[in-house]
Image 1 (cartoon, rainbow, N blue to C red):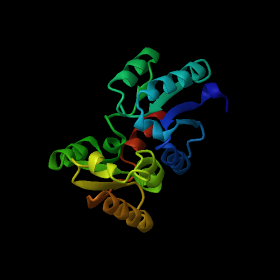
Image 2 (tube, rainbow, N blue to C red):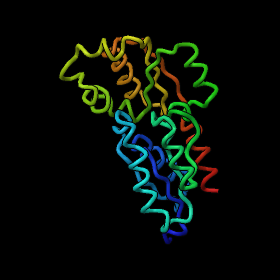
Image 3 (cartoon, rainbow, N blue to C red):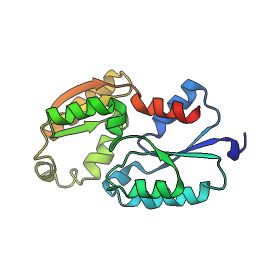
Length: 198
């Protein structure tokens, strides 16, 4: 299949594995995925420029292009860029929102604003993306500074995996937060991809 006949999804690295799993599950042979580094969430100003470079490269190659990002802390800059290229993105401000659904995410945020969220990807990469990227391995005293306003950790899981649940529980203990678990599956990530592929 040529690039022009394929659907290209430009995705956050935190979603790449889930999108590939959905591609396989649904038999979407025409779906292609390109990812940007997940750790850019710690420096969200890099996201729009990274997406711009990929869009400039892809716009003459692919008939359909979508972006598997939420706003992700870009303060609307990503949306401005996507309007310029007439490219649709996933709904919501955070990937947590399209896993749980907007209504449930709003409920959780209202119930406890001081909530730190994890997904399967973030549980698997907790040491690298949270502990190391925030410098907590070198300066553990920063934990109190970073997490002083957090009360709980909610693990929104895409798969029902006991090992990941145990790792998430340990992550909550390391951050001094109350642990909660919710199975979400792929949520609106799957329904959005279904819509794009149709």
